[in-house]
Image 1 (cartoon, rainbow, N blue to C red):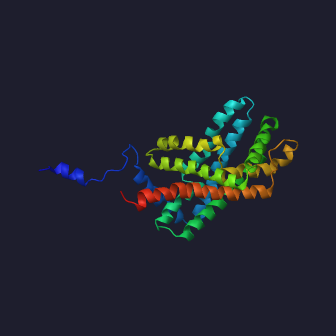
Image 2: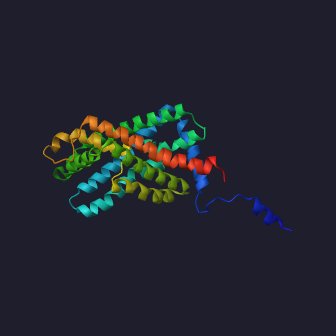
Image 3: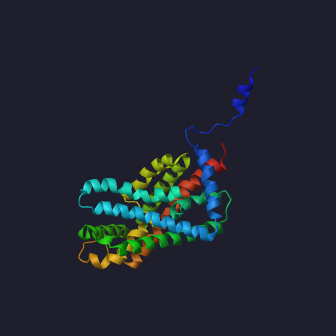
Length: 284
């Protein structure tokens, strides 16, 4: 006859994977609950956190450009290490609880679970996207008027314009796919970070997926805003520079729209909706 301990062990529900972290099932539940909380925040709080998110991501993008433009670092080394510095902005934003449009795409899981309405989801995305744009514009203006834009005898200006022009040189389907892959990595990093139990865990979980985005050439709307906005302020200083394509308002708006749609597909559907069907809808 089985003893009491054996009876208890039979009743206990073990996770599919048992790691020294939150299990995938637990992470799915945490992501779903966080999505609900984010969508129920007062509009003003969401706006302020979104502005902070745009500021932090822009600072990371700025850090990357400064490393790329630094003449003391050869091109090969800069290409390898600059994406790691780019990840700084997202890491700060995630750990400090700032709002970012791309990671908020995971709230599709909360919507699929019927814990939030479509109206709440669209409202959150609209406010956060507007706030991210505002935060990015604020950092661009402050940096421009600080005078640091002329670092390295204009090399920093050239680097920003080349990066922006390169992002605008793709076709619309390519922009969509680059945005899809970009947020697939970003939301994968956020998912890994949600499994961690400490700041160190979250930092280590985020750094490689986030740095892979600029290293491979993938895109996300929040990160592109900084480069595009700054490019319009310094375009006159880059006259004569051989750019892959012209930097225009129409091309910039097109890029932001289709990259954002790709971000929703990559983070919201490939990550959020997939794990909803695995761990939330189909209970193990």
